[in-house]
Image (cartoon, rainbow, N blue to C red; front, side, top):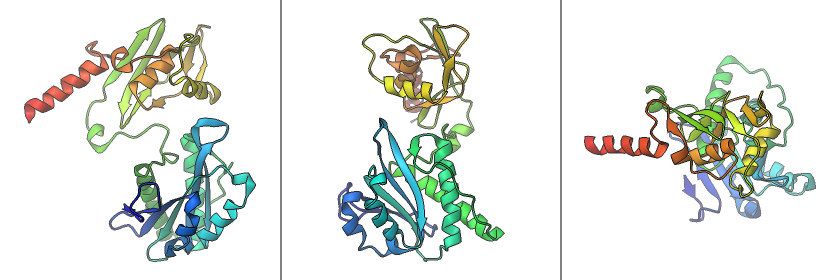
Length: 291
C-alpha cells in the first residue's frame, strides 16, 4: 500500500505481488488529484462508496465499469441521484490488458457478491449477465476477482465480504469452539469465525428491550428488517432464521438479550462453562507457557 501524498485520508494505491491489478482509492473531494494518475484513465471497474443516508450504520455502494474510469467518476460526480458517495475505489490493470468484456464480467460478479454479502446498501439492484468469455479468460478474471476481494477489506471496505466469514487457514484445521448464552429465557449458541462472532441459526433473542438499551440496538433492528430475526413459537422471543455475524461478543450478546451487555462475561464456553474472557485468558496463558 502506498500513500501518494503521505496522509492516510488522501489518494492511496494498493497492489499484491504477482497480481497485475492495481487498486486506487481517493476521497471524492480529491478527484482533481486523482485525475493526474494514468491508471484511472484505463479500462477497469470501480466502486463509489459512502454512508447510506437512510441508515447511518450502513454504507452504500455502486459498482460500475468503464473504458475510462475517470470519465465515469466525473459523470457520477455531476449526478444528483448519486450524491451519497464520499470515496472512489478504482481497479485497473498495470499492463493495461483488461478489455471491455473483461470488466463487464468483473462488474457482474462484483455486483452479485455485494448483493449476496448484505453488508451494505447496493445501488445496483440486479447484476447484469456476464458476457461469454473464452475459458482461459474466465480463469484469469476469477483470479482477478479473488485478489479484489482480498485487497478491499484491508483498505476498510467490507461490502464484498461473505455474510459469514470463512475460518482462516489456521482455524480451519482446529475444532471450532462453541459458546452458549442462556439468560432471561433466551437460548443462543455462537462460534467465533475469523474476526467475527457468529450467532447460530435457531438461537433465540428477547423481543422487549430494556429502557436504557442503546448500544447495538440499530444493528438488531436491521436483523428484524432483513428477516434474520423472526417470530418464534414463544411470543416473547425472536428466533435467528440464519447464522448471523457480529463484530464482537458484546454486540452479539446485546442483540440476543436486548440490553447493553458485556459479551465477554455473558457468553460461556459450552464444554466447560467458562466465560469467553476466562477461556481467552486460558488460551493466552498456554501460549505464554510455550514461549
